[in-house]
Image (cartoon, rainbow, N blue to C red; front, side):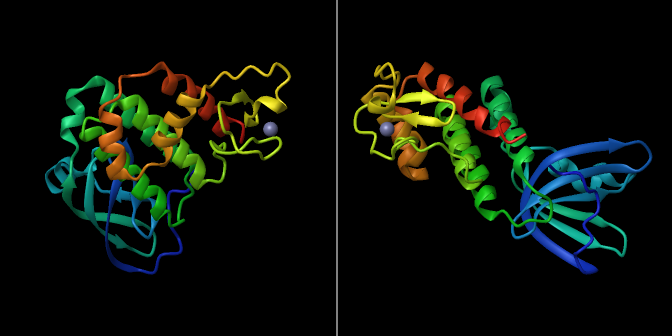
Length: 241
Ligand SMILES: [Zn+2]
């Protein structure tokens, strides 16, 4: 979990990098502390000093905004010097469902990141999910996709292809256990609670490329399948504690 405020390994000097604002904390008199998630740098806490903050950075210190951030590493702290907004995702704020989904993606991602670790794959994953929400793809399917792929990046995603017990290919349907999906031969009841069609929907949602996902997901009615499966996926994060 992210706890350290200062990034001590960065040599003194100026930096410029694209990324997004994960969190913002206002501290009275001292301005703001921002947790930025930056390309090649991973998540870093930066100080955005008071008084000039508002006019200097404008909307670039809002969570969900993507910008090119200019930074200065002093001997003691990393300071925000300026920001050029690249994408403010303002359209997501006009839909409560999209906004809540985006905030959940940010929260879930923040809980798995380590400071000072480059995490470009995860940054790209977040960018892709934000674009999919902006493109009006169904929010529940986008959230399922993002969550499964985030688990995959951290090595925890349950397989959608193979039985977790015997390794057999899941040809028809599957049964959920707390370890992941199993085949009907490994199940005591033998009753599959995810049918063949549903399993193939989950695979498409999780594994299609960004562009193909847009076309595939748009034709889809909102489904309780993804909401139910998301609840199960999320337990793979909490089980780490
Ligand atoms: Zn099996």
